[in-house]
Every structure is written in C-alpha cells, then in structure tokens.
Image (tube, rainbow, N blue to C red; front, top):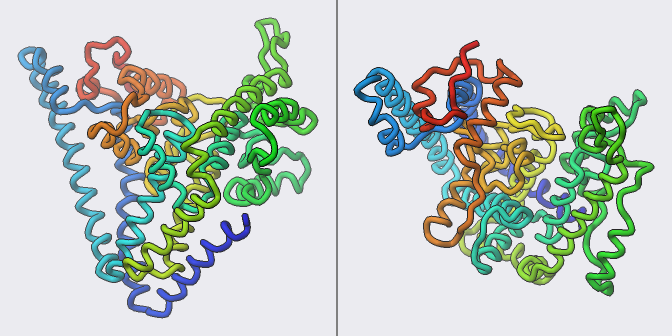
Length: 457
C-alpha cells in the first residue's frame, strides 16, 4: 500500500510531462512563463526580502495614524518617512502581484481549464495539509466547529499523504524527538565512518525527503487492542537507549546539568518524559472521533477517489493529471521535512536545526516558516515576521472573520519584536541594514521599551 501511494503520483507526473514534451510549442511557452515566475520570486527572495528585515512587524495604516498623531508637531520628518516607507511596502505588494499574474494567465491560455483544475486542486490539498492536518489537527492552534475541522481534514486527505490519524501521530513524534534517531524523518544519520559521512550528506537527505515513508513503522493501534492496553504497550516500549542518538550541539536539550556540571536529568530520563507526553498525544488522537471518522479506510479512500474522479467527470481532467497534482503537493510537503532542516535562516534559537526557508514558504503556503514553528508549535501563524509569506495564516484569519474559527493562538507584536532583537544580537549581520526611528514607528511600538533602537552596524 505504501508503494502504491508513493509511486503512483510520480508516475502520473511523468505521464503529464511526456504529454507536454510531445508538443514543443506548449513546452516552450511553459518554460517561458514558469521562468518569469521564478525570476520574480528569485529577485524578491535575493534582494527585496532582506530589505524588509528591518521591520519585524509593520503597523496598519490606522495604527500608524494613531501612533504618529502626537508626533506630527514635533517630528514631522519622522512621520513622513514612516508613511513613505509604509506606502512603499504596499506599492511593492501590488507590484509583485502585477508581475506574477501575467505568467499565471499565460499558463492558463496554454492549458485552459486543465491549469485551473491543477491550481485550485493544489490549493485544496495544500490548505488541507497546512491548516487541516497540521495547524488544527496535530497542533490545536485555533478552534473551529466539528464540521469545519472535519472538512479541513478531508481536504488534507485529498493530498494522498495517508489517513489523518497516521499523519498526525507521526508529525507529533517528529516534534517530540526532532533530529534524533527517534525522529521519523531526521536529516541526520549518526555514523562516524567514511560511509557514514557520505550518508550524512546524501542518504540522510533522501531519507528525510521520502525514504522515511518506507522505513518508519506505523503508529496505528492494533484492531483487537483496547486503547488502555495500547497505552500501556506504548509506555512499556520507549525508544531504545542503546540506539538513541542526537546532534552533539543539542546535548543541552537531552541532558540537563547544574552549574557544577553534575547531571540533574539524564538523557534516558528526558527521553522517557518526552515519550510519556507523546503517548498521551497519540492516545488523544486515537480518541478523537472526528479524526478517526475521516481516517476510516472507507471514508479516506472515498475522499481520495472523489478528489481524482470529480475532476475527471466535471472537467475532463485525466487521472494522470490528478496524480501529477498530488505528486507536486506531496513533494512540497517532503521539502518541509528535509530542506527546512538544512537550508534557511534561524531567527529563533531552538534545540534543533530547523530553519525558515523562503522558497518552501511560497510553495508550501507558509509551511516554510519551520524554525518559527519549532519555536512555538501552537502558533497559528508560521510567518510571524513582516517579510514572511504565510497564506495559510490568512486562510485561518478568513475563517475567523466569518465566525468559523476562534481562539487563534498568535504571538503579540511585542513578542515578535523582542525575538527579532534577540536574533539581531545573536547574528548582527543577518539583517544587513541599520534600524532608524521611523522603522520603529512603522512597527507601531515606538512607546514600547521592547522596541528601543538597537543601533546601526
């Protein structure tokens, strides 16, 4: 079954690619339009995005007006600069949208409704994974009615990444034992031999990207085993300490010592404590009626089948095209597991190597803010800084506007600015540009002590 779920989507992608290659004109136009999109996004990531790192939080126009009102008489130039830069930011957003839309329209003119089915199918699957499986399924970062939560999980089921129950459990294990031998998709292989060094650089990436799906044992509860019996079974079988290993730079996280260097909590105690907490999470997932209903084999396969056959009957979209869309969505998710633990920026200090990757942020609808997510698992927004891209957070915010989501767990402005300043002290060259008073006014925190200027460098 695992082979079917892993091999069919890439085969579908290759079939679609072969069909496109058979028409040189379509293939050439596809490269042209995709190249234009990549160029615009590349310029944004390389040159524009770093510029906005001076603004960890950008105030709204209303807030800016309120904050600047008492300063107009004494500091008119300061206020004028703040408005000028705020307008520049809005103008840039409009400009990049205007530059990206024509290539998208070009792809539509080449492929017609086939492109629309692919694009909107990707959004359904993408938001189903990011919002359904991840931000309300694994991590309850906001609340929603049962039917909305079930619908979001059903959207995630269309991505062909396995039933919600299994996805939620394995991702919970990832957070409990990130970048250790107990992590389902750690990008690190802990071997000291020459072969181990090769595997560390090549095989470890392949493992974290896709091969883990072949190797990681299932966390499903045996059908004939009761929940309490299953809990006892799990508690009695924590990760083996003989094989448990972690990165040396993360030792402080797995071994607590006092000021004199004496061990207060050993690695074994830390592992057992985390395992006990993980077992509680796994049991809660197993007892979640909504998750279990959507994960039932008949329900899951019905949703998956509908996601493939509905485009076929309604839009004439072949099964291979649907599989290509599933392949693209899944590979983007796999990039979060792998690339976001190897490449990117680290504004937050966390006990692993998770990173915020700008490319994955765009392709993964905001999931590329992985370092932020590992800092605070329950934040509904992973792109907390002003320069990050997180459409999934806007999706959740849209649900809240119409009363379908509430109790959103979001960081405060003061927290974000404080973390930004800590990052600036830790890596002074990370932002590359000085901070000026009107930057702080733009953040709407000019009167807050947490946002006092940190100086130029």
